[in-house]
Length: 147
Image (cartoon, rainbow, N blue to C red):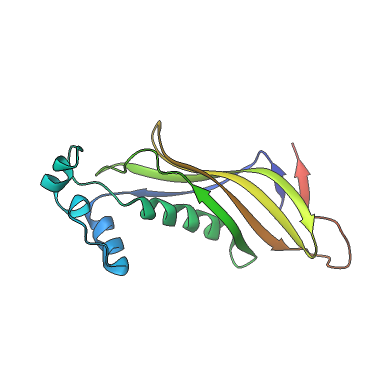
């Protein structure tokens, strides 16, 4: 894997709505009316029911795991929920490498991550992932490249 600062990792994309929210609610026991019922969403100040913030978190996690495959692990991740996920939105979880550094037997990769629907930023954040170095006896990071 070539890790270049500034490189974007592949996006994780989902069109969201009640079917997605219902499945997420089922595994998390999160059947909250504002996520299932349009009238409850309207009463909460939205135009209709809206998605769970933690579902956006799971999209960011899925994006990182898809990119890393079985070669890495998530060390840390943080995000802020800034805008609701509305029915029918195409949500894209994306990431961009901001730094790569060696630490012990691993290469740590820092990323800016975000979930967006078109031009609407839903959840910006950061993440650090770790990869085992290919040559454990050296201190060289895993095939680090810069642009």
